Length: 502
Ligand SMILES: Nc1ncnc2c1ncn2[C@@H]1O[C@H](COP(=O)(O)OP(=O)(O)OP(=O)(O)O)[C@@H](O)[C@H]1O
Ligand SMILES: [Mg+2]
Ligand SMILES: [Zn+2]
Image (cartoon, rainbow, N blue to C red; front, side, top):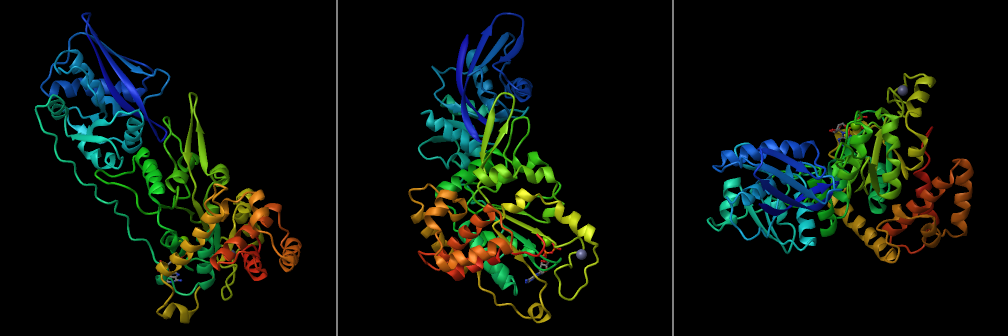
């Protein structure tokens, strides 16, 4: 007795179709699963057995062999439970259908209830791409699954219900409407008093997608400023929104009954995080912080506290816009194009750059503190910003800073200009320019070249630092709608590289 059911699994952040073949034979009772199942699939055996019994069906007292194909695909997770149970019921004649023309996914609880699984969005996309347009899954995942157009979704709450629906004895329950993904209202620049220089730098950074390192004494507002940045980034396009949602789905970060991620992510991982948590990892690799920040902001608060080896792994995502996690059997690629923000105090006590308070650190302490940040990472920062402590009149004032909404409009216009310029280049913002683009789009005039020559020797710039100045200057010109980079725009960009001591 043979039954075939189509199931789905998730590999990295991509969904894959799995053929579940169930074969029953009249030998001593046993239950084997072949086709490279991992520990989770083996655990599925126990869940499936209990769920079938507790849903009022017979668990066949026969030899059961389940073959999961393709064999070379590493299946993981409990997404295959429901398909396994369906196959067993079909093979043992308790479900009588010609065939099961559905893709089936979901985890079973021991009592036969269906549980939501992670990775539904990419799995349903994979089913659609495989022309499998009818999908049966846990009702709690239905809202997420409905984000995919051109598929027919049925949600069930238990194994018994799924069976009743498939055999036409029950009308499928109405699909819940996805609650929009509630994100806490982010901070707004209008709450930030003073700090005009830092705000301007963050506007430039947001406009060109540049990375920023803020340095300043405790309490000057670095964390607050960083939290405001998502509010001035352009809104997510539909495609970006779907990409980001896919990552959150695969990471298991989407709450039940929620739909698209519609706000740019802001990730602020603690400095104790491991390289794997930053870039993705685990036995069946899941996306890390750099991917959860994809299309948004990655904020490394208190940069010198991070472990050096953790920061080292940032190189690939910063350079390429994705990370690769390799395992024995496969390599996983996760998108990770984010805007990097970082903050630090200028020295361990934090007062080095403060005009009124004496710094209590020794030279050695200061040296060691700064030495903790790796040179290559510093070299990849586009803008350095000093955030000074507020003066009394600034703190006591009401602070009528510009609202994020107004700044966001300027940023959006500058981004639009970049999109038009890079139409043929496949880039989306100035920060992504490679040397050939810089040559093509950032040619300074004679006065600009003079400025650069001086800055080069005075700031002891690296070639990379030189290119970064040109990219930032391009963004400043874009904010002012200037086709050519003017000397004063270059001067501003140079200003963002001179930070005392770094
Ligand atoms: N420019 C500002 N305008 C309004 N409030 C501010 C400003 N700067 C600081 N604050 C207030 O001070 C609090 C602390 O600021 P914040 O945490 O951003 O400082 P920080 O620079 O990150 O300090 P640390 O180096 O200790 O992390 C904020 O939550 C906010 O209430
Ligand atoms: Mg802080
Ligand atoms: Zn100090």
